[in-house]
Length: 286
Ligand code: 2HA
Ligand code: ZN
Image 1 (spheres, rainbow, N blue to C red):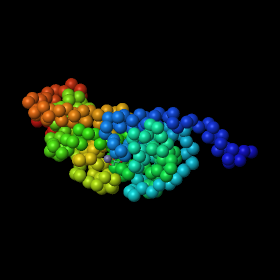
Image 2 (cartoon, protein in one colour):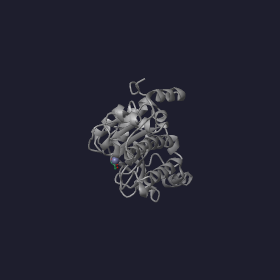
Image 3 (cartoon, protein in one colour):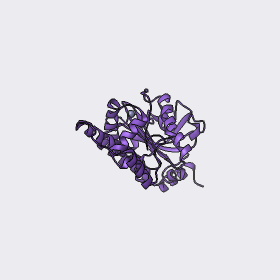
Image 4 (cartoon, rainbow, N blue to C red):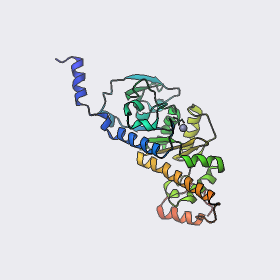
C-alpha cells in the first residue's frame, strides 16, 4: 500500500510540464507580440483563454487547489470552467521570462463567487483586474458560439487615438474602418461596438462590454482600448490587428490631408457578396 504522499509524487512524475503546453506557449507568445507592437505598456492589457478540462488534466492535479480567490460578481454561468488568464498588475513584457508569476490557470468555483487557482500567479498574484469584463464577455460570446474561447483586451494605439478624433457612433466608426482596408469588412462584417467611457475594472464596464458582445466580437472602450473575442488566439489577435491596421491607415490618411476617394458602399456590398459575409444591417447604403 502506498501512502497519499507517494501517490501524489507518482502522479506528479507522470504530469507533463505545463510550460510546454500549447496554451501556456500561446499566452507567452501573444503577450510578447502585443508588447512588441507597443499596445500594452506597463500593466496594460489582459487575456483570458477558456480551456477544456482534458487540455488541463495532463499538466495539473485538478484536485490540488493552491488558493481560492473571491470574485466580485456572479460567475456561476461559468462554474467548473477552466481559464488561463494574465495576472492583475502584471506586465505583458515580463510574461515570456516568468510565465508562472504573470499567468494563472483558474477554475470557476461551483458557487460562482470564487475562482480556484490551480497553477501560476506565484507570489500571491490574482487574476486580471478586468475579470468582470472578461467573464461577462465569455458568457455573452458562448451563448452565440460555443467554440469561442479567447478574450483579449489591449490598448491598440491608433484605435485608441481615433476615439479622440472620430465620432463615437458605431455605424460611422465601423464604416470608416471598413473603408480604410479592403479586408476589414470580410474580417468583421458585424462591425464594432462602442461603449461609453466607464471606469475600468468595474462590473459596470463588464456589463456594457458584454451587452455589445452579443452582436459583435470587437468592442471599443473610448480613450482606453479595445476588447476582441474569438475562437482561437490567431483569430482573435488577427481581428484586433486588422481593426488596428485600419485605424493606423486612417491616422495617415488624416495626416496626409484627409480622404479624397474611398471604397464605395456599392463596392463594399460586392465585396461582401464575393466573400459570402453579411455586413451589419443598415451600415451600408445600397
Ligand atoms: O490591466 O488594461 O484596463 C490593465 C488594464 C486595465
Ligand atoms: Zn486597459
